[in-house]
Length: 425
Length: 144
Image 1: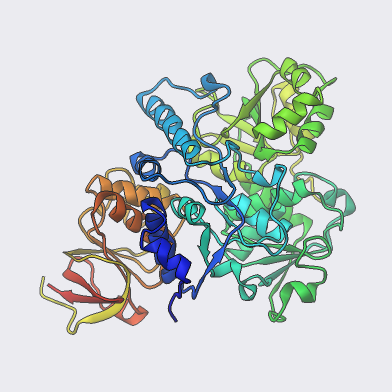
Image 2: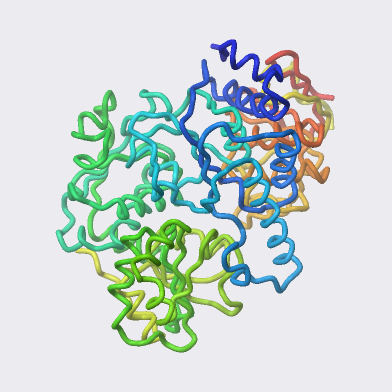
């Protein structure tokens, strides 16, 4: 089984379309060879994850592509970077390391702009105006974007990561392997949620906890949810995917009766008719949420919402919960991370100013867990995000409580962490 | 140490290059992202070989592990001359391969990566000096 290239692809590899295309084609074809792909597919769009600054090599790569005259060949969005370009002072620059990351982060973001990427700086490109269509091939990086595109939109992307994402954008090609192929898109394990109460299924925090459990159970295979409401929101599906891609390596899930490749359980499973079934009970949900909630102190230092980046609907919900409530307690910081396009729409609707007046700090272009934004001395943070709850303790050395939006807002007004440990029924 | 690989092992080439170095055989896979520090040592406190240095060794572990940002970590170690001399796995790993591929393009330094069968994997012992060579898509591993 070998990788066969079209005459056009061979010409790209031979340098007939310039050195940046040739370099990118070497990377795409080598990855294709290693993954056992037999051909390349044309892709409609790319989402780049390589724009967070982790060191000189990432910058050298992007700048080399710029020097070689590289340009993206398909519409390309960019993930969050290491700095908020709109509010540059939000990212701390006190230590030498913080200064190095801020400067390198800015240079790296500029290189991706020079390569022709849209300045989206969001981990939720699926919340923008143009979205991939069902069945179309794309090459997206960033685990939550990958799982959303595959599961909710029904587009087809394998797990792309740093470096390969840009090579795919410059060539417009990706190896035809993994989740691009029908054979790898069927469900492998069933998560039966039919015992959960209507009240539990109506709670926002149910979905990140379901995702967290799904990742732990499914690992890198494809979970199928049974028993979720047919009108479960995109934000809830986003929360499932982001958490499942954090606790495990889930890149595709199905919700029977809701997502495009799962009109029925049989359709979702395809040939995997003997897939194991796990029963998701309220007890398991409560235990999983308690496991993720590491904070053992009462004093709340901050709330962080918007991981993945908040949608317009989520900012409307925050507005409804916050505006008119008691004032924000002294010493508590309240962050909402979102993308530029969602922020602009919310500004147009008049939602931003009242929230900022109450004390919300909006974080754009980046996220509170990938860079230094939280004030030094922050110990305990509440979040409604399973992904944030999973990564922040390790990245930032703080403790978290995974909570509903209402619990987050109420605790922020008292300064005291309050949550119902047996919330799910 | 006397040679322990009694006959040459053949495997599959993942990336090109040649290496001769002492084996560091891991009891569990390590994630480059979050598992190996900027000085080339294992910083994952839960890893059984926490504190071991991967620089200049042939890193032998069953599989890759962890975040796709591991590509950056490996490429950065190669840039700084602190990477493993070679890597042997039992399954192809896109994250590790990408880091090595890109660093070879950027810095001209090749870190050969080979995949071997599980039974051949068991024949490679920690601490022995081995040589990795490639011919086409075939990798050869022998005591040196």
